[in-house]
Amino acid sequence: MTERTINVIREAFTEPDEFTSSPLYRALSRTVAAEERLLALAARGRAGQYPTFLFFGAVHQLLLAGAEHQLACYYPSVAGPDALAPDEAAGPALLDFCLRHETELTGLISTRLVQTNHVQRALGLRIGLAEIARHTDAPVHLIEVGTSAGLNLRFDRYGYTLGGRRYGDPASPVQLVAALHGPDTLPDLDALPATASVHGVDLNPVDVRAQADRRWLEALVWPENLDQRRLLAAALDLVAADPPRVLRGDAVDVLPALAAELPPGEPRVVFHSATRLHVPLDRRAAFDAAITAVGTAGPLWWLCVEDGPDPDPRPAASRRDRVGSALRLRDPDGDDHTLAVVEGHLRWVETLQADPDDSSRLEGDEEGRFAR
Image (cartoon, rainbow, N blue to C red; front, side, top):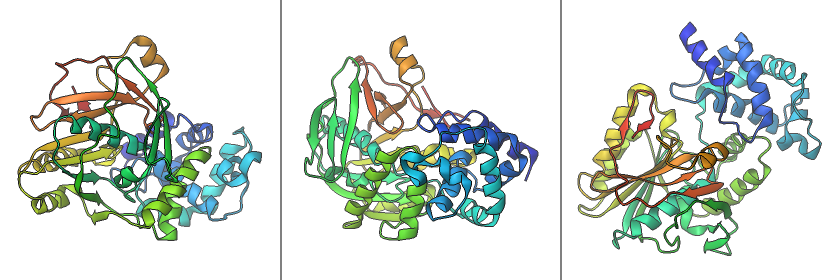
């Protein structure tokens, strides 16, 4: 393990901007960043895995499985409403827990993948499909890369409330609610293209019917996000009754064969959210090329939620109050459009001022962002 690797891990824990709704993880991150033994443990994950998510997911899984320790008192997911707010004792508790359970944690960190299933992100897929429906009335072949348990692929079985307006199935046990901001209107989210086929691709597909896999997904939900935990459980139960087809393997290797199965000339949609950041830097160009190649034999719509808009076209107040990611769509002509800026878990959507000339090329830069 090189000093450079440890420094990269330390940097991730020093400024954990991703934990916007987890005061506990923000507090515990400071302990990890300052403790070499914890950094060495966190560095045992596979290449490309985001260390903060993987490390805290492993700790959380052991606590959810019943490991008894003072650290559990700080986790609302374990201690319930009596959970303690993070204080000066939380950091030492984390260190002691990790040293006591180093073997189990090493096993989880070195073998598991970060496979967050924020079912709320199905809203981003639905918005993208509604936009695609404005340009084609043909059935589409839907592929999600990094699909994990395939929850987003059952987007058509959920109910949605966006800005007070309802879409989808009002009787579904999975109801997704998001705030709506911005000057423009969205397309009708009930006017969607038919789906000719649905496929997922994942390095390590999650079996929604396996208790161990479900527990790992639950552990990846931050301890304070109790509503998200309940939503995840409802979605897992729904999808377990009819799981979509998910192919195991690296998208770089799997997508060409999958694309060859699709009827020539028929449109296909590739969707991914918070997936590309887990692809090792030296594989990202190949990742992008594999997605692009899906369009060799038919029109390709490439939809993603990965990075923030750059530049951010929103007013200064929006940029200050709502830091979000771009919901981007590349059309079959190769033109790219930012459909909206969204909260990373799609808790809110902000539309942008309509601009008929809003198109540019998306190129993957050395940091893995989509550079505009």
